[in-house]
Image (cartoon, rainbow, N blue to C red; front, side, top):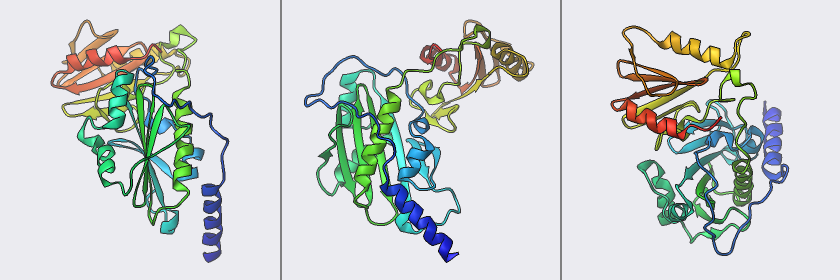
Length: 307
């Protein structure tokens, strides 16, 4: 057992020190430029790093959604020395425009859930330091064993929090910079194309639920909640010889039960059952719970991607 643990520690040390394939750096301007907004919807924070990339920073780590984004940490009942235990939190905020993003970068608080990003500026043991080559503007903070990096890409602000269970490791800042560049690379990728076969519906995959429900907190990627409202997104792919659109219609009919009330003017078809509003949009089925579900659904429909 001692020999196995020794081998594992050697592998972990190698993972934390070895470089993965270098990411394409984002341009940094000496004076932040306004420019057009590049991002129109919130990305899934757990999709911004691959498992290989995340485990470069968090050995054996797995992802879970938290109130402020995506948390990479050790699975329960995984026993490692404290010197090898890390956590990484990835949080993304998409502002209405670049000016609003600049403001958020300097004072990143829009809800109690994001308060830590302002608090770290008060608690920091020393002033922030720049991170050349990361985003349009970036800052790094050190708070005991936790390294924070906050950076802006056009109208998006990304906050990374990297913590070690023991005292801080000198490599934390370099590893966090790699993570920031990996995230930036994913953020710059084009949106997935719509289904090539129109019979399968508009959506090749389910959109990230919290990109549709403003100020919400994720459960899984297809569920989002906030005070007074929740959203679940169900995506219908082709299955068993049926098109995605056919599957979505059958799914919608399955959830519809009497005495459901038909609601007109929302999506392709909709009904209300008690406090829940069900809406089908092409090959998506949306389940919305709210006392003002109609208004919430209209906001969600306005946020739906093209495909």
